[in-house]
Length: 310
Image (cartoon, rainbow, N blue to C red; front, side, top):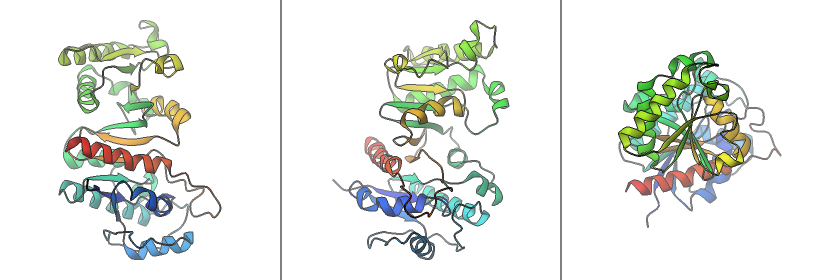
């Protein structure tokens, strides 16, 4: 079987992404043909700082731009370059020149300094394709999808309404097609029947609507958030819907931080990513262990997802 070609969005070059790419190349090329969205000049600069050899078969898709790498620093130039790398990877996938894309971490503050209006990869994908891209993170033991993502906590409650959550749940099921999905409540104790808030009414209605539309009892809840990820609960559910970013990702990362990947669902292309940031605190530091497991898992998941689409 021919190996799929995967475009690698190189991420923020002031962070650890390029080191992960260089150190993992020999292993990931067993699963795919990687195409790295970075130019030779910037690759050489990074490799020199890292004192790493560039593999002979490290194939590039040249991205315009050149700047001085400043390890661990927020920079509008590195932010712009990481955005351009990502956009070229999307274009390659949309034009069917690659089978999938895998993204290395970007820095949101660097994007902001570069006057990029998006806060992350998923928002770009949502706008580019005009579809409700769904962010799901996890590993084979546990997956969590996020109903709201990178918004202030004070905006979460007002974002929960029956219609939009119903649509989200239906789209999520059509993407993962599993038999049982737990939906988290928003408030402590799932509001104790309205004592601690009324958002659970909207969540309950959305669950009922989604199950009725699918003609299956797929979604269960609202689940009490502080026990939803207990061992007993995880024996019943492997897929969860969280109402906001940290509600879902704090327990996931506590349990499976080095294994998890980020997957964009409900899109015409396959996109996966590492489930960690740029790690500016250890970028380009010698003798600091760089864990590449999330990246390797993201590659494997991208290969599996694109094979399932064929």
